[in-house]
Structures are given as structure tokens and as C-alpha cells.
Image (cartoon, rainbow, N blue to C red; front, side, top):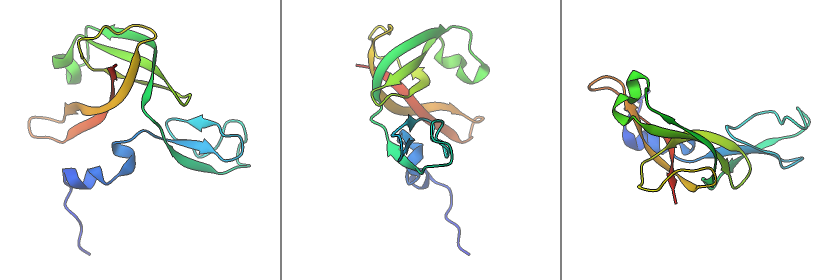
Length: 133
């Protein structure tokens, strides 16, 4: 069996890596992020389907990290926010420096950026972050 060598192109083919994909209940329309396989409202009496989220939202709450873990030392200080997405779910993520002040109520959009690197020549980890609009 021929296996594809791991590459940036291969990772980009995985839909959930570079998109906000949640799940939606077919019975009550409840929307979840991260995705769930069972609806909190309907239990197992329904089917959950993938739902691509817009990534647009509003800062619900935030804090500034001044003394980070070793993985994020070079980024400090930085903001981490809880963002209420337009579709309803609340998600947590870093807010990238864009020159705009971050406050409760600030409109943001999702962007995908490097989070950290494992070692000097290690795997680069990407994740969603938020950018103020």
C-alpha cells in the first residue's frame, strides 16, 4: 500500500483543519462548535450534520496574557477572547494584533495562523485566531 507523505498540501485537504466546522441538529436546529455527535436537546433521537460556520462574531469577553507558557513566550502580551459567533456558538481563541483595540463588543473574523512549532525543526501547528474588524 502506497502512503502519501505528510505535507502541507495533504493537511489542507482536511476540511476541518482550515474551516470552522460545527454540527447542527436536524431535529431542533441547535448548532454546536466544536462538533458534537449527540444533540444536548434531542439526545440520540436525531441526526447531527456538519455545518460550516462563517467565522464572524463579536468579542463576548477577553483577557490579556502577559506571562504565557513557554510555547507562546514570543507572542506575549496577547489577547485571548471568547467570541460569540454570528450563528450562536461561543468559541475561544487568540486575537491577533491588528492595530485595533480589542474590547467587549468588537467585531472579529476568523483567520488561520501559526500557533507554535514543535522544536527547532518540528511540525508547525496552525489554528484559528480572530482579527478585529
